[in-house]
Length: 397
Image (tube, helix red, strand yellow):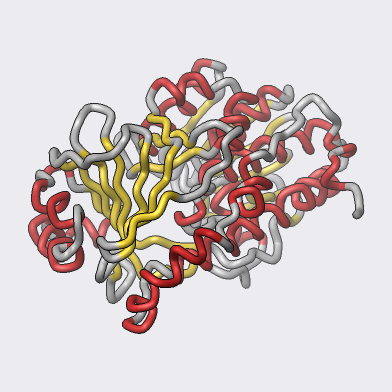
């Protein structure tokens, strides 16, 4: 293994390059956009398993320095019912971080370690072991990794019939309101409002950060969403959350300039083929659970590390890819299935809205057992120093 070409310079791309460098494998990252993605994206949560994965590639401390811990979760329904959500007591908190800060941390560490990142390189095709870009340039590779996100080009090259992302029926928006909520600094509140779902938490510098999963009549790209005026978005948010507490105050006091519009929220169906020839998928290109999972970024980083581990330990590329898929597929699809169920509850019909205040407390006491639902997810740890071929997940039960 001499050289790996990584398509995509977001989160999974630099994470894969760092893991490969740790495995002693050279990689170059090719990013389609002409400049780095500084300042782009909203906020995400890194679960304890994601932080453990960042430890392996040496970026956990840097991420913690720009993140906010969240150790307590509360659910509210229609501004009436308030329930403490059970959490695992021994895994550590979630870390809430702006996507731009996570991106910058991974990008800076990759550059510090001498990893090359080339911009303005949009992949249009592959000829045997040569990547072809839209500017006419080419790059040879031993392995090509598709870390190019939910609208992956590499996924289509591997399988022209591969499914595309499925729209959730919602758009993502986020803002910072000076309106303070009476919550502990490490509390995140998941609020089922009268007409839409939103979440909020005390901001580290004061005020309240909020995120909305806004029901909408059609999907919008980031570009399309930003063509609509901020004033129009604020009006739509007011119409949707204006009868909620504290949703109405959060929206009303949010300065328009702090509003971020992220466009349509998607979820990936199961992707039948993760690899072909010398191409392989990682991160959202292979598995993008709904944001309801709280695991999207964590799973991407885990997969980057497991792929590097398999390429390090298994000389035959096809066998390495197959082993990587066996290590990852069942885990990511189980988490995606859990998140999909939650996602359906974010856009409830009239009957479901009526029943939610009654059913949610019962579900918290029964279905939402933290050990059963979150234990296997958050306690997962990759044994980097152990040979991939001896991973316990490969043992037939």
